[in-house]
Image 1 (cartoon, rainbow, N blue to C red):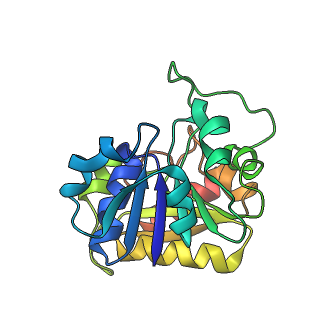
Image 2: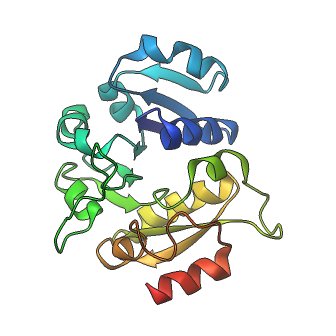
Length: 208
C-alpha cells in the first residue's frame, strides 16, 4: 500500500519506519523540505522516500497526519486535495506551551475533518506513547500485546487502518464514531498514553 505521512516527528517518523518494515511504500514529509529528511530515511530502508507534503498526499492511498497542532491550518490544507483518501488523524490538540486547547463541544478530529474535505477520516495513533510505538509491537496473539483505539464513521476506512495497526504489532480496537469514539480517546481519558492490552483498552473506552 502507498502511504503518505505529514510530520516526521515522534509519531510520524516511527510510523514511517514500522509501516515500511511491514512492506508498505512510504513518502515522509515535514515543513523543512525533503533534503532535511535524507539522513532520517536512510535508516528506514528503501521503502521510505523523503517528499514534499504535496507529493506525500498525492502518493498516499492512506495519509497519516502527525503535524504539530498549531500548524494544522497551514500545513494540512495546502498539502491536499484529500478527496477519497483514507486520512489518519494522529494529532492531539496541544498548544505551543503543551497545554490542551479547549475545543468546546468538538473533538480534535471534528476540527481536522474541516481541513481535509472529501477524506475518509479515521482517528488513530494519538493515544500511544511514541516510545511504545517504536519498540513494543508484538506478533498477533502474543501475550501483553498493546492495543490502539480507532475511531471513524467510514467502516471500510476504519478496517484498513485497523489492519495496518495489526501489521505493525498492535491490536486495534474500534472505539466508535469519529465524534463519540474520538472523544473517548482524547488526552485525559483513561485510554490516553497508557500501556493497555485489548481487554484493558475496551474497559477504558467503556469508562470514558
